[in-house]
Image 1 (cartoon, rainbow, N blue to C red):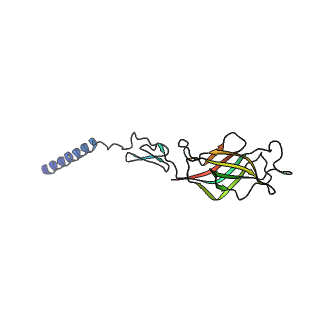
Image 2: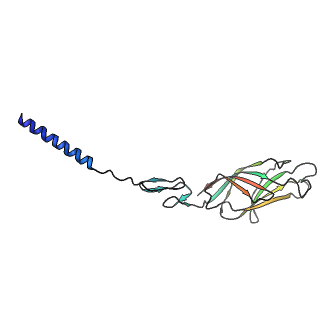
Image 3: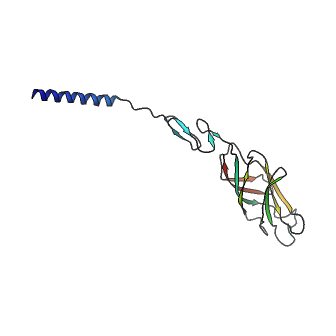
Length: 191
């Protein structure tokens, strides 16, 4: 019996030692504690994993896209008259946009909005979409009134640079210099 009692005491001593050892163990520190990741990044094993379009130790640097794809153009403002006269003799203007880079036409709308009313917005879905492959260069978007008898009338235009290193990657881009015409582009980005 004494032998069993000593064995029991030994087992209790061993279990007590194991429990004390395990309770004294410190947990490994969380490698992501104190790590801040910006712009939708998240921490994995102490380092930031950045979403597409961002880089840097904390995802703080916006990456210039290789192209910006335009899928739709909305015309949100255009002049009601041509210097006081109507755009067309008996009806409203037949509007369409053109995008150029320098003197090169990047996109010329294959159709127009007939008898457009300046109190409405007009949408042009680009099919296929167009790619602006030099996002930091300057482009121009111009609005014209289609005329079937003589040259089309220029209604106004805006110079724009499609990419800004400080605005994130918005899905719509407002092109508005406060003049006669204004536009909204629906865009996506590629890197």
